[in-house]
Length: 321
Image (cartoon, rainbow, N blue to C red; front, side):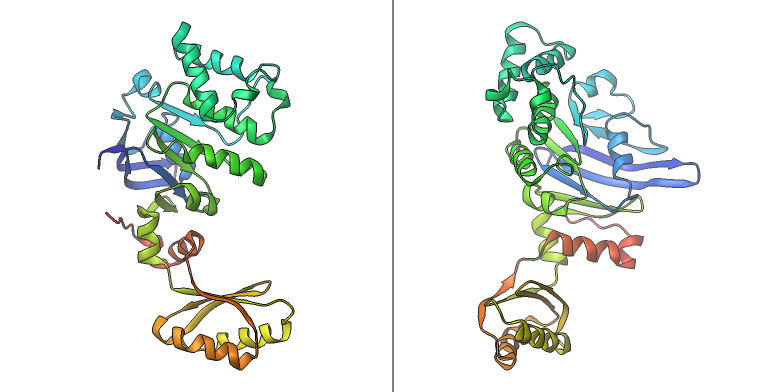
């Protein structure tokens, strides 16, 4: 598959600190790509290198076919960046801001107006285009930032924590807009909100301590790394029975990582064959009434914690083709 971003031994050191260490990474063209990692993993450093805001100590990379060290203006015209909390002239109207941004990219006349109308429609802001930005909600401001980043029709769009500062309604709005960009541009999204990545991304890379832990599709990660889990939901008002069942599960040799949330228990299993036969009898032994018993879908959060928390994951890098 053709790559939108290729990193070949990309390294960045700040004195004695290695922020990014020999990174080798391919981002498929047209993908919505999630970059994950704990604080200090090197995510911000990588985005700064790929967008030309910093230079590598060693190695190199290409973005949209341009070398990040020599691409210059030609590279900058093919990419865009949406910061975590974009700032605006709040006295401007949404359409005015996009027109101004388009002019900075050299757009004029009918082409400029077409681009403005196009990005307003793409981000769902057509009806708010003639309102002052100062009256926009948080979600609307973030969508306006996305529209501003799309005005030049970038080949690669970099998003830095695009939804972390938003309320649930705002997060829904911006993630919906990002999902609709699939195949229109390559989206490279750096975030610590794993649920957002799981919702919109098709490829994921995890960094830890400047090293690549894994790069894969979300489906590959779930198939290769997730431990089988079951969810047991009880009918309400069975606190005593729930506690008994939880104790029985924790004592079962085939079970691990039992967690409890309200009336639901989630249990990881080492042996799915044994668990499939043993779970129902344990529920009967605890004397509980079941609302639901099913094999759970592994979450990206569980995979992330497993990979970053394992010594092997911290000292080596792997890639799933």
